[in-house]
Length: 183
Image (cartoon, rainbow, N blue to C red):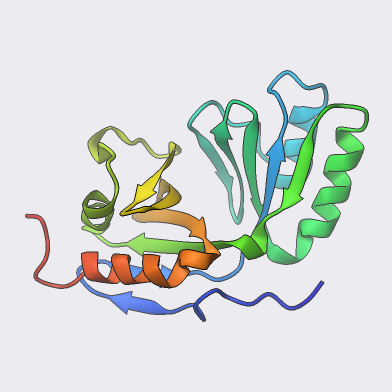
């Protein structure tokens, strides 16, 4: 496996919230119905977590499993471990209808942190953040691009397609500009 390359060189912006492109993360898109035999074992083998409930993400350190749709899960792990994870998935789901694909290099991941991090997201995404609980994953749009995000600690983690990483970073920087707070 080649050395991981960050989409934007782990650029950071310090505004009223801190925005950081956090570099490459191992990501596997796993397509399987929730009743597929071995699914729970497969997810646990790769992430150390349970299979997430609808619209949830289960985080365990630098690993996570997120529910993306009724038959799709996003598995997050260290970048260099995707090969072993794919082998573990294949073994756990042998003979079962599923599809697993490494999507690490097709994604960019950002952290938005600080006391007003929610304001950055509020400006870009049509989501009621007052109802978004810790552990809830939301697939939506950030301005005009597909994105997924979840509340984590004192901020949010946002994933988007790598092809629009520069655009999304620009949106996040603009939204976090000092003096542009919502209240």
